[in-house]
Length: 413
Image 1 (cartoon, rainbow, N blue to C red):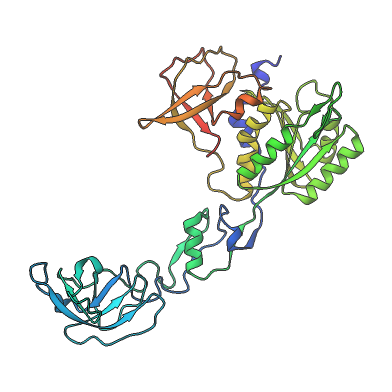
Image 2: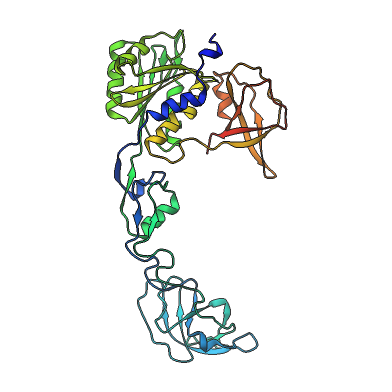
């Protein structure tokens, strides 16, 4: 058993990784593929938005002075001289006592200074389409969106470093952008090593089905990265060397699991030590689960060596690989938020110099985030993690009573 003195503190291990990861080069990316990516340059508007004065509602374009005194008790009759639909380009003249029927988004006639909403009008008794009664006095500017009221020419609408969400994509589309400068979405290769692993089908004695690679591939996708399935490589030095070399060429980051614990068969370690020119660092991190962890570079490509136990592999991904790969994207917040949740049960633990990450189900109850522990916290119990949506961050100590607030990491955020 490792002594606490030989353990690497979590923050030290995370800092070690992040300092050795540099953002990828910016690319010109099609707008349809940019959601979740980070802008590499300021985006300036090349035009006004909206590009012309238009109406915010269906109604009638009028001169406000022609509606003075209008009310339900004193309806004012106006002559309807034209109709403008959305997309129309007409600009009819408005004389005293006239109005133009207009649809939401349509250009407001030059002579009009207000739009009376449909609900503030009454049709004549004979439903004459060429006339309308106004029952509410209009003010100048009512229901009119001026050109440039949202965005003006030359305005910086999205600064460099912005993470593009659906609304930002909409802004860029409204400005006519087809491609934008962003940091590339990382290609993350996931590889399993071990002669005991199989993908599917019947298994013989001593063999196991590979669950880590499929789970990690989905974790990569869920995080917004491009996953590359690199398959299983058996315990053969040359095959391992070839696989890692090819992965370094093909991918921006590599994830592998197993072979990083003290006492593990060291073939993978030997190969990675050679390929990294001694850059690979093998750590025992002061956490539970996911204590064993390795990080280094192969031909400049970051490689994350995660533990072999299924739960440990996913926890290690959350704590080390995901934040570092987000840094490859130049993401402004590599780590997930820590939220405080109220424990619904006692957390029993003893002092061991480690931070524990317990699988839990978190839900909001009357505005309070509550965390309930999942039964079965051992690192091989992947089925228990499948029904969890959070990790409770439990500091070193002698346990915590129900009602205590502790930090949690939401897994599906």
